[in-house]
Picture 1 (cartoon, helix red, strand yellow):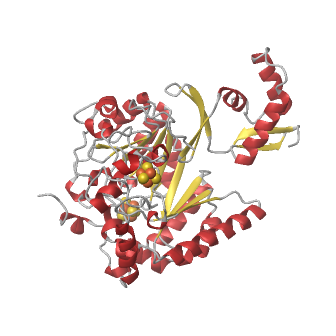
Picture 2 (cartoon, rainbow over the protein chains, first blue to last red):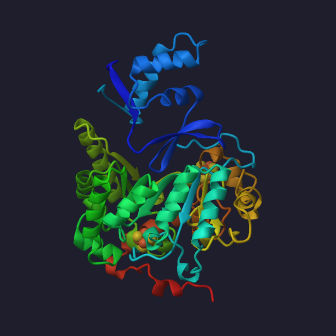
Picture 3 (cartoon, protein in one colour):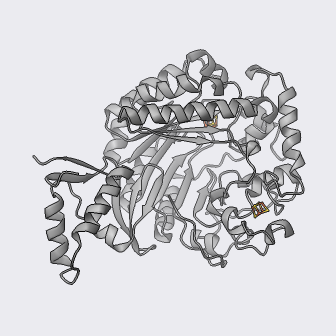
Length: 92
Length: 381
Ligand code: SF4
Ligand code: SF4
């Protein structure tokens, strides 16, 4: 995973807050991934423009008390890529 | 990926899935159709406004995934309006279609309405077999053209192929066709025996050797696709009749899924109408009352209703005792242990069904086609 690449959700997939479940879910053809708080926060920043550094700095602003996020976020994004939830492309 | 609740009290969580069966009308006549045998008796379809209300109520209850199905949902000319309403409410909208009734104008209109995904079903890998299965001579070519148009419009596309003894040996050609059409995922589902498929079971059930060969071929395809970097998921569904344990049907009765039938009957799954019990309709009660309080939805929640075999079994929170429809169809008792389970005292009926199927030499033309004429025979007078 190259740090300069930007992330976006897989085309046709949608991230959404579900009040009835009290969590973010990732909706895709005939299915749903139920996300925990941190996964929801990270995916909420996956917008087709941010790269890893931008995601980390946005998270840092939002959760200043959280310290060493970088490894966890890196690991989560790698997993999300492997699962096919997100795609990465060259920054344009 | 929807994890069932781990608690097993009887207070239901929200229904996360709504299957909106807009109509039982369909131009095809698949002999494995899961619609009820007496579908012709339920002709009083909900109006557009009634469907809008169903969408609003179910979204308020927490439903997030929505399937428009049938019958053939494209038969309804208010489909686009309903998709727009659903999308506005925040549903992820799936159209589950045979592809017949679709054309490029409708693909564009559905896209404008916000439709998220189209699932098209294929009957076979070639025209002749597809025509014999669906009872419609030119349907296959039309489906292929529509699958291409759906991909060209930029939708994610799941292709669904119902497998049975007459097409399962073509698995390689079927997967190759789906690959060529650009599918994002393929469901290779040996038919489940409810509705018309139960009626035609002996003429549809593949042999164990056929199932094993098809599963192995699917495994080889997964490796080949991965080697090419092609992201096309293959889901192979083994028929219950060759399993040792039943499926966790619908993730548990009244636990995640809700089906609204064309006439407004609310069901815990699309086959439940075959059970000897009454289901409330949206014309009589609110969806919230039906989901939370109706006798029908509460009947098989929790585990107090279970047969002694299941109640004492440590797997009961894993498969919920299997499928209620299958239990009823095969034993006459909807609360019985699903006979698919090797622990069921009725498991012998599964072996008997396999033997019966092995002796059945009928071709597709010997099966009962799903159509209004045949359905009238099953309508309660
Ligand atoms: S299974 Fe075949 S006959 Fe039944 S609704 Fe689907 S396309 Fe129509
Ligand atoms: S006995 Fe009942 S609960 Fe146990 S595995 Fe079989 S069907 Fe499931």
